[in-house]
Length: 352
Image (cartoon, rainbow, N blue to C red; front, side):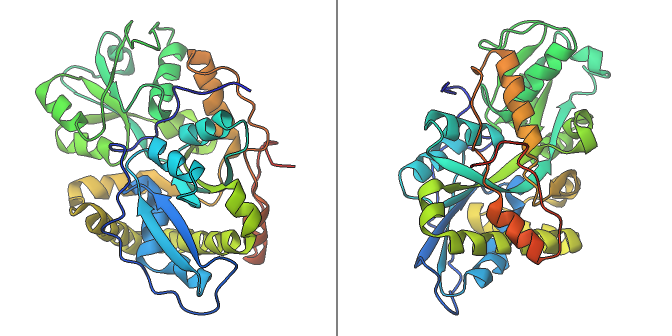
């Protein structure tokens, strides 16, 4: 099976876990088959299911006497490492590190068990330098990291325009400048970049600095949907504690329903969670445009993950991966059925 060395990183900030600031919700009720479940996620709007589900106690409520222990991470590699090392049971994470963790372990590491978010990625540019999509040629455009989800999407878009860029160096008809999301606004202000293909809230932070949205990536996908955040689980934990995994999924499904039914309250809850995690909330001019561009969904949008892998292969960043078995949506579909909701598809990539 092929390895995926360049797709390890998610669209995060840094690489170290940080759980010192977490306040655990008191567990009440009957304990399930595990005393605790350790759930990892990023302090990022595209991980709103986890932010709100923990903040509002909606996931803990479904766990009863089993204690939810949340842990935040700033990038995909450290979260995958924690999952593989037995320090994490369930995680919220992007498609590229999901693929990478599965392929590098030869299909033994994780399973994708549910969806969380779609969209929330934009091409934002300096309107004084770039007025049309064709004007992107010859300009310096940032992506979060070499081989990450947005980097691959931008390289694929460039190729479809008929332009040439070396995927390794980022040099060519467009200069692809790999820049950490946390410093991208500074790079934009200094003129070091002319724009960026980035997730929220970075895109809206750039807009607050005077940039304009030139393209929303969702417009490039069928039904304007593509996976940005998955829910993954350690295969060992799934095998040993399916009741706990099912309870977490009940919590995420209920959380997603609450978010979609109460968008303003959910936005405030997510921002409160971000403040608790990072010490700083997002200002209104950033969170207000960022929030509605992210679609919260239970569907992992499996077909789009396969397409993203195909884009990476096309760009030369990935050998053809074997993704068979990466999904196990059995418990999610059980939960959805109990809620009177239709099942979701694994696009033929489900575990046997």
